[in-house]
Image (cartoon, rainbow, N blue to C red; front, side, top):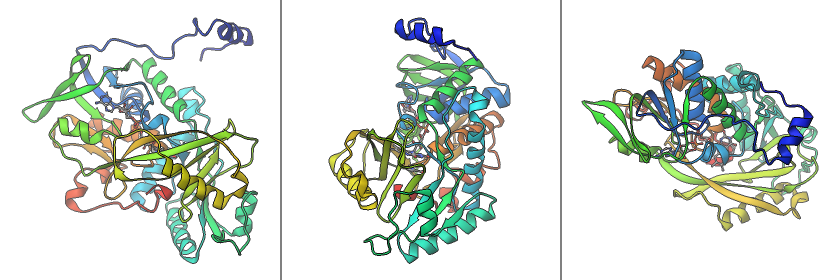
Length: 416
Ligand code: FAD
Ligand code: PYC
């Protein structure tokens, strides 16, 4: 790791960072690679990194139409956890959480992982029963999860009002203590820097406009910076998965929706865990800068718009103040939207396609940030070995023909 003295940091600041070394190269795309990954979000960059690190491959490019992390990676609310209901999902998300736990060391880059705990509040008897059932299933998979009574919630979230006479009383909560947050753009930058150091070409401002296929096998890509031949191609273009798949003649079982979020002005530390409420329909955490990070469900209609809208601000702020009246005089700083690709069972697709050499990783919907390292790890295995790892085998495209779905709408928390 490059070490900076306090003097060199000050010199760089005064010199407008002109002599600051670049964290990764900015190469021209070559006419041909062994493997091309489409999409420079966290999942695409993690895939490239693990292809190089775990499988010893180096003739790899990541092609990104905009800038690294400019898609959902840089737009999400940074919650990570592995408290999923079904065994298949629990194993995959837990693999990811374990990778997150060692990621700063692995990448030699501080991803600001903060395992401050994720709570899901129960406001009625049904919520309590549903959360208890879920917690038991999660624990059967060896994943930490517990039920709190109202006093337990108060101990974790001192600003919570646990009076039983509220309109939406807090009757308890589930808690995953190993859940929390990590800095989203640091995850993308850390993977980018580490992949670049292993020889991966990262090409920004390069949009894929076509996929060349001959005799049922992928041959390469048409891009805004010329044709790139490739023996294997991995599509990791959350928000535009269907658009990319259509270039290969594939129709995906995916709907694209806008998911919005917002942050408040920074305030002193007041909330030391992530709090989610399905019933009141809002979630909130406090960033290290002091801003409240607030979100809820996705827009009900399909859209490719990456912008926020006023009725969502009204709804989410109303819900937040219902839960925590002390936030009623906070100012909002900014609001945005990202496009989430959602499968009918709210689980991702990670695997092969009917086209030889063409692989797809998509459909993470509202919850793929937490999966970033795990998704990259299993997708790299799938591409390198031409077959899925046991962890992602259940998440194949074929499940929509076989009917073996993995319904995780409940685990998607407030987002669906
Ligand atoms: P992206 O980061 O979107 O990367 C895909 C990339 O593909 C983009 O950079 C895009 O520009 C590029 N691309 C698209 N088309 C092309 C093309 N033709 N050519 C080249 N490149 C192309 N998940 C959680 O786990 N926890 C959360 O708290 C959470 N909160 C969220 C809040 C919001 C508001 C949103 C929108 C999402 C949230 N998510 C959350 C979901 C999470 O952000 C995503 O599932 C995850 O970031 C997807 O990562 P990715 O790398 O696959 O996608
Ligand atoms: O998957 O935990 C999650 C999440 C929270 C908000 C959006 N997605």
